[in-house]
Image (cartoon, rainbow, N blue to C red; front, side, top):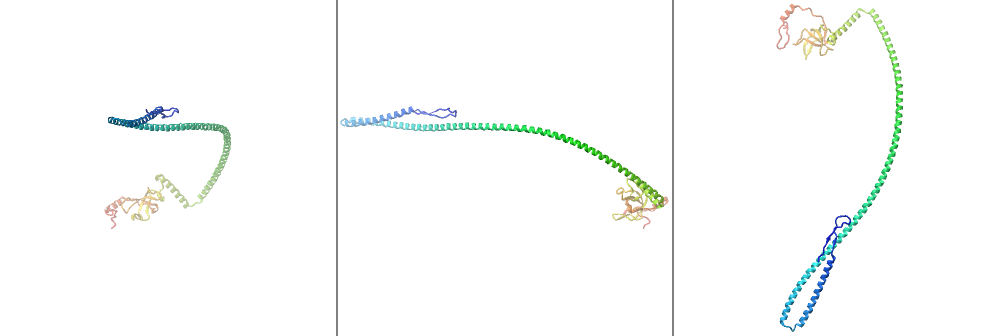
Length: 368
């Protein structure tokens, strides 16, 4: 006899497969009854053997020695069988206890599993109830939110309509204001144009009057100057006439020089004028033109035409060109030299010595 345990899935709640322990109690009860019967039979057999052995011992005192030996063998054999049977019974008892212990353990596990399953079902039911409660609450909240949203939308729509109405009124007012401002600007512009035209006319009249007065004053002044000039001409001296002529010549000369050179020659000199140096002219401390050296004006200086004059001197102390740019107050006008005589010029040429190679100066033969 064995105890079988079946694990059957339960799908009552639609969860994962559960374990249910099914016990065959009938087989267990049969085994227990059979074990009890075997134990009672053993006890009864032992009693019978004891009683039979006592009867046989009391009644066999007068029997043969041969029967005693056979009975001893039978006793030994019966004892051996008894021992084997006891051992077998002990083994079966041990096995039965083990099976009972195992069955109790399985029963305990089944109860624990059943308890866990009930707890799980209870938790699931509680979770379902909680979820249903939360869902109902959520639905209620959503309904409230929806009602608030609809109320808000209605208020917003009402406000929008009011804003549109106010905007329309404002647009009409703005348009009217713009038209009024445009008309006002037009009137202001017309008034300003009229005022400007009037002021321009008055200013033009004043300008014409001033111009007329100025012209009349200038005519009177010119007439007075002409009268004074005529009167002055009638009473002027010879020196005044000469000074006026000289001034007129200077103006003409300056005009001619400006046309030729682009500017007047400094100091009032004329191209071709003969001049002499008023002092020694030096360059880096060395005399190049001595005082009283005669030269001829060539025109204004190219580097400083307002202050300097280009002069070609007859003699230069140092070697180089004799045409030098001098300040206008370093020279003065002098008489022209006498006309050149060819015979004298040839004589001067013959008596002139060549240049000294050391000093590079023109040495006069008469000196030294």
